[in-house]
Amino acid sequence: MTRKRDDVKEAIVEAAMKVFAKHGFRASVDLVAREAGVSKGLVFWHFRTKDELIIEVARRALPTDVIEGCVSKNLKGERLLECVGVNYLSKYGIKEMRALLINTFALANINDVIGSEVLRVCGKLLNTIASKVYGDSSKENIVKVRAFFGALLCYVLNPPEGLSQEGYLRTLLKLFKPSARTDVHPH
Image (cartoon, rainbow, N blue to C red; front, side, top):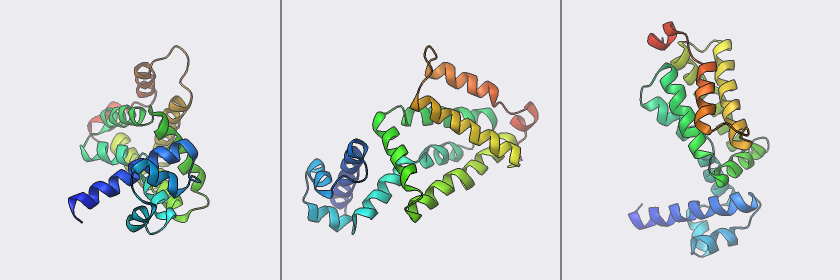
Protein backbone atom coordinates (compact mmCIF):
# COMPACT_ATOMS: atom_id res chain seq x y z
CA MET A 1 0.00 0.00 0.00
CA THR A 2 1.21 3.47 -0.74
CA ARG A 3 1.64 6.06 1.98
CA LYS A 4 -1.41 8.01 0.78
CA ARG A 5 -3.61 4.89 0.95
CA ASP A 6 -2.35 4.19 4.47
CA ASP A 7 -3.14 7.77 5.47
CA VAL A 8 -6.66 7.58 4.05
CA LYS A 9 -7.30 4.23 5.73
CA GLU A 10 -6.04 5.61 9.05
CA ALA A 11 -8.24 8.70 8.65
CA ILE A 12 -11.24 6.43 8.12
CA VAL A 13 -10.43 4.38 11.23
CA GLU A 14 -9.93 7.52 13.34
CA ALA A 15 -13.23 8.92 12.06
CA ALA A 16 -14.96 5.61 12.79
CA MET A 17 -13.56 5.67 16.33
CA LYS A 18 -15.05 9.14 16.90
CA VAL A 19 -18.40 8.23 15.36
CA PHE A 20 -18.71 4.84 17.09
CA ALA A 21 -17.67 6.33 20.44
CA LYS A 22 -20.45 8.89 20.15
CA HIS A 23 -23.19 6.81 18.48
CA GLY A 24 -22.22 3.19 19.11
CA PHE A 25 -21.39 0.55 16.53
CA ARG A 26 -24.86 0.93 14.97
CA ALA A 27 -23.84 4.30 13.53
CA SER A 28 -23.93 4.42 9.76
CA VAL A 29 -21.00 4.22 7.40
CA ASP A 30 -22.32 7.49 5.93
CA LEU A 31 -21.53 9.22 9.25
CA VAL A 32 -18.05 7.69 9.27
CA ALA A 33 -17.40 8.80 5.67
CA ARG A 34 -18.61 12.30 6.44
CA GLU A 35 -16.39 12.52 9.54
CA ALA A 36 -13.39 11.26 7.53
CA GLY A 37 -14.11 13.61 4.62
CA VAL A 38 -14.24 10.74 2.12
CA SER A 39 -16.92 9.01 0.08
CA LYS A 40 -18.81 6.01 1.41
CA GLY A 41 -17.36 4.05 -1.52
CA LEU A 42 -13.82 4.83 -0.36
CA VAL A 43 -14.67 3.50 3.10
CA PHE A 44 -15.82 0.25 1.49
CA TRP A 45 -12.73 0.18 -0.72
CA HIS A 46 -10.58 -0.01 2.44
CA PHE A 47 -13.02 -2.13 4.46
CA ARG A 48 -15.14 -4.55 2.44
CA THR A 49 -17.89 -4.52 5.06
CA LYS A 50 -18.97 -2.40 7.99
CA ASP A 51 -18.13 -5.38 10.21
CA GLU A 52 -14.48 -5.23 9.07
CA LEU A 53 -14.35 -1.58 10.11
CA ILE A 54 -16.03 -2.34 13.43
CA ILE A 55 -13.53 -5.14 14.11
CA GLU A 56 -10.60 -2.81 13.43
CA VAL A 57 -12.02 -0.19 15.81
CA ALA A 58 -12.81 -2.84 18.45
CA ARG A 59 -9.25 -4.20 18.29
CA ARG A 60 -7.90 -0.72 18.91
CA ALA A 61 -10.34 -0.20 21.77
CA LEU A 62 -8.99 -3.17 23.73
CA PRO A 63 -5.94 -2.77 26.00
CA THR A 64 -3.87 -5.09 23.79
CA ASP A 65 -1.51 -2.25 22.85
CA VAL A 66 -1.07 -1.31 26.50
CA ILE A 67 -0.20 -4.86 27.55
CA GLU A 68 2.00 -5.70 24.58
CA GLY A 69 3.78 -2.34 24.79
CA CYS A 70 4.71 -2.85 28.44
CA VAL A 71 5.64 -6.52 27.95
CA SER A 72 7.89 -5.58 25.01
CA LYS A 73 9.94 -3.38 27.36
CA ASN A 74 10.98 -6.55 29.23
CA LEU A 75 9.74 -5.11 32.50
CA LYS A 76 9.09 -7.48 35.37
CA GLY A 77 7.37 -7.41 38.73
CA GLU A 78 5.99 -4.15 40.05
CA ARG A 79 7.56 -2.14 37.21
CA LEU A 80 5.45 -4.08 34.69
CA LEU A 81 2.27 -3.54 36.73
CA GLU A 82 3.09 0.16 36.98
CA CYS A 83 3.66 0.44 33.22
CA VAL A 84 0.36 -1.30 32.49
CA GLY A 85 -1.48 0.79 35.08
CA VAL A 86 -0.15 4.14 33.88
CA ASN A 87 -0.82 3.37 30.22
CA TYR A 88 -4.24 1.82 30.85
CA LEU A 89 -5.40 4.80 32.91
CA SER A 90 -4.03 7.17 30.27
CA LYS A 91 -5.73 5.37 27.35
CA TYR A 92 -9.10 5.02 29.06
CA GLY A 93 -8.93 8.42 30.70
CA ILE A 94 -10.19 9.55 27.30
CA LYS A 95 -13.99 9.44 27.24
CA GLU A 96 -14.16 8.15 23.66
CA MET A 97 -11.82 5.24 24.40
CA ARG A 98 -13.92 4.25 27.43
CA ALA A 99 -17.05 4.26 25.28
CA LEU A 100 -15.37 2.16 22.60
CA LEU A 101 -14.10 -0.33 25.19
CA ILE A 102 -17.58 -0.77 26.65
CA ASN A 103 -19.12 -1.12 23.19
CA THR A 104 -16.45 -3.67 22.29
CA PHE A 105 -17.23 -5.75 25.37
CA ALA A 106 -20.91 -5.62 24.44
CA LEU A 107 -20.15 -7.03 20.97
CA ALA A 108 -17.86 -9.79 22.22
CA ASN A 109 -20.75 -12.22 22.72
CA ILE A 110 -22.25 -11.70 19.27
CA ASN A 111 -19.20 -11.21 17.06
CA ASP A 112 -16.81 -14.18 17.01
CA VAL A 113 -13.78 -12.16 15.90
CA ILE A 114 -14.21 -9.56 18.62
CA GLY A 115 -15.01 -12.31 21.11
CA SER A 116 -11.72 -14.02 20.24
CA GLU A 117 -9.81 -10.76 20.72
CA VAL A 118 -11.38 -10.22 24.15
CA LEU A 119 -10.56 -13.81 25.12
CA ARG A 120 -6.96 -13.31 23.98
CA VAL A 121 -6.63 -10.23 26.20
CA CYS A 122 -8.33 -11.87 29.18
CA GLY A 123 -6.51 -15.15 28.61
CA LYS A 124 -3.10 -15.31 26.99
CA LEU A 125 -2.05 -11.69 27.56
CA LEU A 126 -3.09 -11.59 31.22
CA ASN A 127 -1.39 -14.95 31.77
CA THR A 128 1.77 -13.41 30.32
CA ILE A 129 1.46 -10.50 32.75
CA ALA A 130 0.98 -12.94 35.66
CA SER A 131 4.13 -14.85 34.69
CA LYS A 132 6.23 -11.72 34.33
CA VAL A 133 4.93 -10.05 37.50
CA TYR A 134 4.62 -12.98 39.89
CA GLY A 135 6.95 -15.58 38.36
CA ASP A 136 4.26 -17.97 37.08
CA SER A 137 0.73 -18.06 35.81
CA SER A 138 -0.81 -20.05 38.64
CA LYS A 139 -4.54 -19.68 39.21
CA GLU A 140 -3.89 -17.38 42.16
CA ASN A 141 -1.60 -15.11 40.13
CA ILE A 142 -4.02 -14.99 37.22
CA VAL A 143 -6.78 -13.94 39.62
CA LYS A 144 -4.50 -11.20 41.01
CA VAL A 145 -3.84 -9.82 37.53
CA ARG A 146 -7.51 -9.98 36.61
CA ALA A 147 -8.39 -8.18 39.84
CA PHE A 148 -5.77 -5.54 39.03
CA PHE A 149 -7.33 -4.98 35.59
CA GLY A 150 -10.81 -4.94 37.10
CA ALA A 151 -9.71 -2.26 39.55
CA LEU A 152 -8.28 -0.20 36.68
CA LEU A 153 -11.54 -0.52 34.76
CA CYS A 154 -13.58 0.53 37.80
CA TYR A 155 -11.39 3.61 38.20
CA VAL A 156 -11.87 4.80 34.63
CA LEU A 157 -15.62 4.12 34.78
CA ASN A 158 -16.14 5.85 38.12
CA PRO A 159 -13.09 7.39 39.84
CA PRO A 160 -13.47 7.44 43.63
CA GLU A 161 -14.07 10.92 44.98
CA GLY A 162 -10.98 12.49 46.51
CA LEU A 163 -8.53 9.92 45.14
CA SER A 164 -6.27 10.99 42.31
CA GLN A 165 -5.30 8.67 39.49
CA GLU A 166 -1.74 8.60 40.84
CA GLY A 167 -2.90 7.85 44.39
CA TYR A 168 -5.22 5.13 43.15
CA LEU A 169 -2.47 3.48 41.12
CA ARG A 170 0.00 3.70 44.03
CA THR A 171 -2.56 1.95 46.23
CA LEU A 172 -3.16 -0.75 43.61
CA LEU A 173 0.56 -1.34 43.26
CA LYS A 174 0.84 -1.83 47.03
CA LEU A 175 -2.08 -4.26 47.05
CA PHE A 176 -0.81 -6.30 44.11
CA LYS A 177 2.92 -5.99 44.80
CA PRO A 178 4.78 -9.20 44.05
CA SER A 179 6.91 -10.67 46.79
CA ALA A 180 10.55 -9.62 46.72
CA ARG A 181 11.49 -13.10 45.52
CA THR A 182 9.27 -13.03 42.39
CA ASP A 183 9.93 -9.35 41.73
CA VAL A 184 13.67 -9.95 41.50
CA HIS A 185 13.72 -13.46 40.02
CA PRO A 186 10.61 -14.05 37.90
CA HIS A 187 10.57 -17.36 36.00
